[in-house]
Length: 118
Image (cartoon, rainbow, N blue to C red):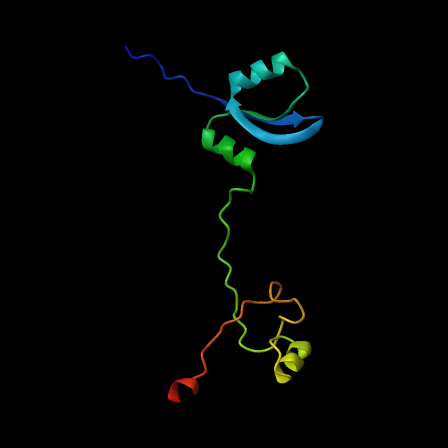
């Protein structure tokens, strides 16, 4: 006869580091019981008796491991506002003089079609 399979139960708790809440930890239920017996009330028990390790991992991770939706950024081919328009008309490069090259949208540099015909 085969032995009945033992079901591993999982627990999630939050470690206390220097009196402050630290990272969340996934462990077997019996390991949590040992941690709690060694230092009762130090760490915060979030949930125990979880049947699936994956469910325990998701609970511990929260939204930090969730898939991020794809974000499309629209490329802007012209000046964004009146200040950039003035710089563009005066021959200045929009955003560079004002230190805004890291803040604004990405610039798409397209070679002038007239240069190729010379």
